[in-house]
Amino acid sequence: MHVKFRCSKMAVAGALLCGAAVSVAQAKTLTVFAAGTLAVPFTQINKAFEKAHPDIKVHAQFGGSVKMARKIADLHQSADILAVADYSVIPKYMFGHNGKPRYADWYAGIARNAITFVYTKQSKFASKINAKNWYKLLSKPGVEIGRSDPNTDPSGYQTVQMLNLANDYYNDANIEKQVLANAPKGNMRDTETHLISALQIGQIDYLAIYRSDAIQHHFKYLHLPAKLNLSDPRYASYYGKGVAHTSNGDIHGKPIVYAMTILKQAEHPKLAQTYTAFVLGPKGRAILKKNGFGTFSKPVAYHPDNMPQPLQALVRPWPGQGQ
Amino acid sequence: MVHERVATPRTGLIRLAFWLVGGVLLASTVLPLLGLVTFQSPAHVAEVGAMPEVWSAIAVSVAGALVAAACAAVFGFPLAYVLAHSQFRGKRVVEAIVDLPLAVPHTVAGIALLFVYGRHGILGVPLANVFGLHFWGTFAGIVVAMLFVSAPYAVNAARIGFSGVDPRLEKVARTLGVGPWAVLVRVTLPLAWPSLLTGVTLTFARAISEFGAVVILAYYPMTAPVRIYALFLRFGVNQAAAMSVIVLAIVLALFLIFRYLPVWRGSRPELLR
Image 1: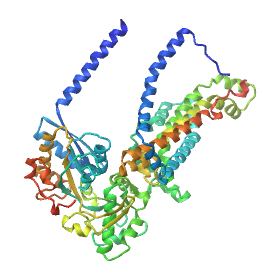
Image 2: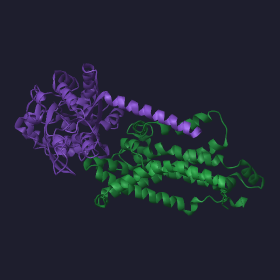
Image 3: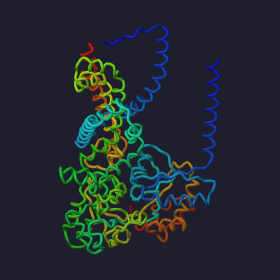
Image 4: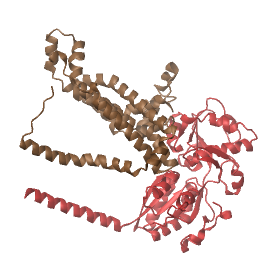
């Protein structure tokens, strides 16, 4: 009898739990997977969005762009929105090449970023360094430079591409080699934000990172020329001359453009549409700008014809429709 | 020497029940791992097994964990002995400090270690100047991070082992004219031996699996967990899981060797035979 009583208690508890689960599912939750560098602006965007739409909860997960894409494509985790730091991640992993399932067929460029170096007061040459002499000082022996792994992380290969362009820009073939000599493997991490504490402690003097991170963390940073920092889509063809040799082959420079898409498998396609319109609209753009990102006067989209109808008016075609 | 307990019908029933209940835990350990193994096609395992960087990462992990476990034993067992055998003010505080690494988030542990062992750290500067030892992006850094997160297991297991040694046995040995060091070596250590080895094994296991603290100090040279993560980022879940299978197989083999090694069996001290 005793045992039976306990069982019935457990059954009641179980039923209550199930009931709770159902009621949670009824509250509309939008799942957003986004690049780690978008964590700060997207958290603010999500707050503003939830305020404007009290019936919607936004659940955001942040991580490396490729990791978040792989979570959807390989681990089959469900999300409504994917926002990445490199627009080419979406066609590469989501467009269903090589007979893989198709998760998306368009993307909208939402923001731009730039590669820079951040430093602190205690960094070597902190008082002398500027946008003109940076490559000479960063080449000096004893300077410790941190960067992310070019084999796994976009900012890792973008840093190398930028330095490769600097060889040409300053007409000195040794810049890349000398600066990278101060950024050996020991100073590398899978993503550069893992090196912020090392910079603050003084383990490294400079850290290659995105301008948005520099601004959000209130670091001093170098205002590198636009032709080098990968920020301006107008220099796309020039950026292409910057090459990083990685274990995945040679990667050519591209402007750093963040992109988002709504996944075909989205559980809440309508909510996702409202959310995307919010990000592409003036409020979303203002929040991105405040956090150090460059924005488009009118966001660009690759294959806008595949976008949900109401979103199409918010964008213009991607320049050259290029991937 | 081992006592075989005779199962009466009653205790037999209890054991059966306990096996059933305990089996739930066993299954919850085995099933996910089995899922990981069966999820793999042999082709993926072969592909990953052909990568030299996979084996170098496993070598770094095994070597690092062995050194960390050895350090934990050398520095942890004396501490465990003192904690088990003496009463002093602030003992609870010392015990809490020993356990503290278990509660510290591992990235925080890594940052804290960098403070101390880094380029400007209070230990990092003298160790670099005197011994040329660097902890940033080096094997030494990996060991220090592994040691920090795994040492509590060595100290706690050894403390329980030392506490379990009946002080009367040690006293009897002393009255027989055996010196204090000889009592330690010939009575206490043999009796505590199984716990000490458990401590070393747990420390090794915890050390080899550490990711968070290690990656703050050293991404390169890559340990096995870091390499698995890098494989996941570069190729995806198949290659990462394939390497996990290889690592699991090696760790399982090492565990079995540890458990069946003759030194494992705690022999009763010869003095007491």
